[in-house]
Image (tube, rainbow, N blue to C red; front, side, top):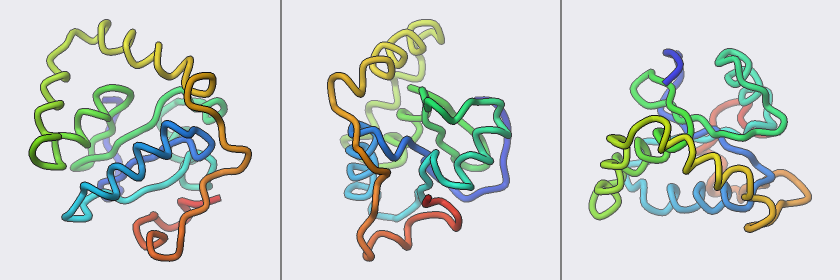
Length: 141
């Protein structure tokens, strides 16, 4: 966690990353309360939030999760989102108790290899009209 922000609960992710897009679709499917909104790092809002957190937006080696006004990064962000999705996904939130070094190492291994293993989209994510409402204003490129 790196600080507080004045945004609704949101996931800010790399729109070129296939793994990130899969997580986005997963959250859309299982977030039945529609708690989370979205923005891609490549959007004006994504770049502003990353800059405010002191993070480079290119390449985006982490995604950010904003929940209850707090910002979470890396595996903590994944756990926070999963913890809000209900059973059985909520159980994954226990990973937050791992030592920070272990969580960082695990997340960084996946992040460093995500394009090689999962691929990279030539263009940023283009949502269908039915999910555009889940994106924050200025959250798309």
